[in-house]
Structure formats: C-alpha cells, structure tokens
Amino acid sequence: MHQIITHFTDDDLYKLTMCCAVIDNFPRARVKYAFTDRGNTRYPSGFARELREQVRALESVTITDREVEYMKRACPYLPHWFYDYLRGFRYDSSLVKIEQDSEGRLSVEFKGSWAKTILLEVKVLAIISELYHTMSGHLDTIDMADFEARSKVKARRMIEGGCVFSDMGTRRRASFAAQDRLVGAMAAVSEESEGPGRFIGTSNVWFAMEYDLVPIGTMAHEFIAAIAGMYGPQMANHHAMRAWSSTFRGSLGTFLYDTYGWRIFSLNFSEDYANMFKGLRVDSGDNLEQLRLIVDKYRRLGIDPSTKQVVFSNALDVDRAIALRKEAEGLCRPSFGIGTHFTNDFPGFKHLNIVIKLVAAKITEAWDFYNDTCKLSEDHGKYTGRPDVIRRFCEALHIDYKE
Figure 1: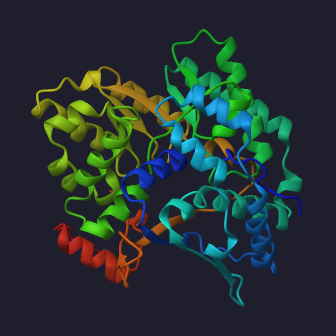
Figure 2 (figure 1 turned 180 degrees about the horizontal axis):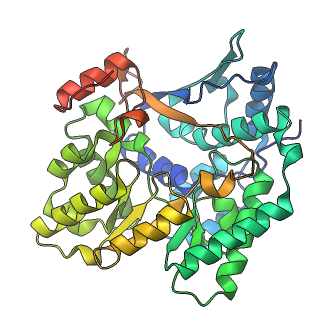
C-alpha cells in the first residue's frame, strides 16, 4: 500500500485551532478516544495490520516551511509560538491501539496527552476510509472525470442558488485524490461564476493552500466533551466559550453548540458571549427548528439575528442547502459546510459512517483516574459514548433518556 497521508496539513483546520486552545488552556490534560462504525462494517481481512502500518507511517510526516508560511498568512489568529510547537510535533503511533475481531469488526483507541492525540483523529479517519475503499476494490471503479464533472454541477447549483459554502469532507473522503479533484473543480467554478453564492474554501488546510482558498473551521464537539468530562456537562459550554475567547480574542467566533443539545447551551449562552461570538454552527437536529431556536434566542437577548452567522453542516446535500438558504435568508447570515456528499458521492458507492470521539478526560496526569464523557447532540442517533455514561449525562442535564 502507498502511504495515504503524506502532508502534515492534510487535516481539518479545527484540529489545529483546538490543539492551540488545548495547549493554552489545558496543557496537562490527558484523554481517551474511541472509534465507532455506525454501519457495523466488516473490514477486509488484514485491515488492522495495514492500518497499523499507515498510522506508523505518520511518524515521518512533519510540517514544512511552506505550510508554516501559508498558515501564518491565512490564519493570523494563531499565535506564532504555536508554529514552534508544530515544527517540533511528531506523531506517535504507540498512542494508537488497533484491533480487528474474527468477524472483521474494527476497534481503534487513542490514549495520551490531549495536545498530542488531538491531531490523530481526522487523519486516522481519512486513512480508514481510503484504506477500506482500496482494499475492497471500490476505488478501482471510480470514474474521476465523471466525479469532477458532477462536482462542478454541484458548485454551479450552489452558487446560482445563492449559497455561501465550503468543503468539509476530509474525514470520510473516498480518497485524497477524490478530495483534490473536488476542491479543484469547485474553486475553478467559483472563480468563473458570477452567481450570488460562492465557494469560500475548505476545512482541509493542505487543499486550501494548494488552491489559494480560505481554510474553514473553528472547533469540534471534543473540545466541549473533554471539558464536560473534567468539570461536568452543565457548564461545559460556558467553560469552552471562556477558554476559546481567552485564546483567540474574538477570532474564530463560530461556536458549535450542540454537544449536549440546545437547551443547556441556551442556558449558558449569555448576552456577553452572544455578542462576542459571530455565530453558531448547526450540526444536528432539524435544521429549520434549530434556526428558529437560534433566531429567538438572539432576539430575546436584544441582538439582531440577521447580523449573526449560522453555519449549517448537518447531513446536507445540494438540494437541502439551497432550500435551507431560502428559509434562512433575512433571518441570519447563512453558510453551509458539506462533507460526505461532496467527497464520497459516487454512483453505487456506499461510504463509511464512521467517527472517532473523545470518551474520557482528566485535567492533569497527576490524577489516577479518568472521567468518562460522551456526546449527545440534538439527534439520538448521533449520541456517542457508553450507554451508562450517556444515561448519567442525560440525568444531569434533565434530558429524557431513550435506549
């Protein structure tokens, strides 16, 4: 097998921004992550062995001067001390445990310093996806020219439909080559288009650099979930907003609010934070219902919601995004982040439904125990974590628990 990940910045921006915030606020924290395959996939024989080799190969991947100089231009909110950290960063495959059972089911776990393990998640997911499609022979059936043509059609429709949108498909892409084709195609269409919408960038820092785009992203659920493990879920959003604002001083001001659902977030979303953060990201639940809740909250705080950005990223395709933009226009400043529908959309091709989530944390290595954590969101199907932990968090947040 060829080495799948060969560029340090072949990663989503939010992993780098969170890494910076973790070092700044929780430098001694240690965490555990666990892999979940929602499709209960049976992986090819020998998959775990090949995956171990790919993860071991990450140890040779380091950031280059070109990548650092690009990020300094494109990401001025990142402090320069962080680039010194990245220059010295080395992946450590010993932090990753990979197993495969007799039926082909895959188990992947990370454990160690939060600042070191945080940069593994997206890369390992991208490796799993491409490795699976390679070993299963799926990539041999891909018509890249057709994929590029269909990607251009999607971009034109989004632009003509007035959508401001970005690619967020690194984690579950069919392959590096597929994402390369997609981003290149959409960047070309956006450059030549005069429509009301625009393709503003990609979450993947490498491709943003390659195509002179804006790297898009702020944070993931793990930031709030880890804090909930250390301090409890009731005030996790508050502590996360405070830590984030302390590190980035108003930049990167789109908050991912649904780690434990809208209700507890809304109770933590006071006027000062509502004014400080430029907007919110909707990643679960019914998009229109969530929009109504957001608009109503801003209005009750005396803030004009039309001045605030709402980023929609929940299971979107082109049709849903265009319809949603029509509903959201005038109520907020809508934008759209689309992942799997962009980077893993091939005729007759079933993509993997996989995630790696942070499941336990402790604030310092001096503690001799970890605190379990989980993710709840607005969709029960997106709950991740042990059932007993999910039940306990639901009880703490007065959420009706469903098996």
